Image (cartoon, rainbow, N blue to C red; front, top):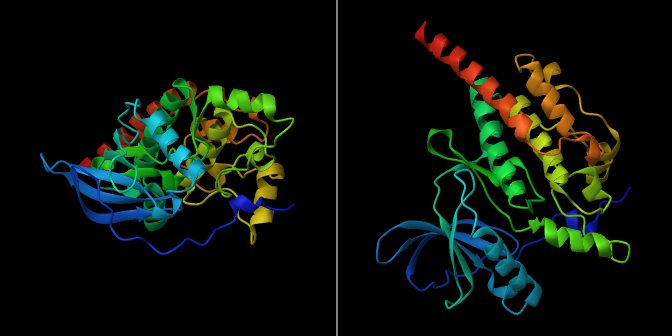
Length: 303
């Protein structure tokens, strides 16, 4: 099986000099991606700290890249949830289009998993609970993220978690239109190979169940310290998503409540119709498990 070319790593050009954004002072670069860079900045009249996502200069003449940048802003500006990075405004009159977002000092969830190896159960469940709340809210708003993974969750002070990067996200309405055209034009295989759903690999139209699969893979990694599938090359990894059943989480981490294990395994079903329709039931399971694990942790500290 061949990996879709757009899922292979691409070389990025050199980073550009710091642009100008009216009303904001740029302080430092936080991150850089293929289409944009993110800077820490502050508002001139209030010194409020913000994050500014600024499209790369090389994309200013690229109509598709600009349209996607504006679409992300339009999609995200109305969203209001404590576990999703807040978009504040779109600035068009600077040297380059800029999305102004809340500044959230943090590390990625991926970094935390990698450095801490095995998370305490109560902490892992707290992350799962917050991530599920963000994703359920997004789905209730009729939005499919399409790239759920630990790198797209930030963890800040007091283990607060926020979902980021909706650059690939689409509304159910947009996806419905694509479904009618899918017999004529195959959709792109978008996502990250370690977390991608089988239907994305097969270039089928994504749905909330696509996010739920990727979230299941993410949950597995949070609870065990590693994703369920490994392979020496990307093609073999994608093949495993389609054909191989993941091992039970309990085989790696027996302290996980069975009800949590079963719920996560259900999310990773190969067929979308066999996965949960939403995360409402999982939220109940995760909350009960978190409260129980937290109580045990407090009792342990008192001894």
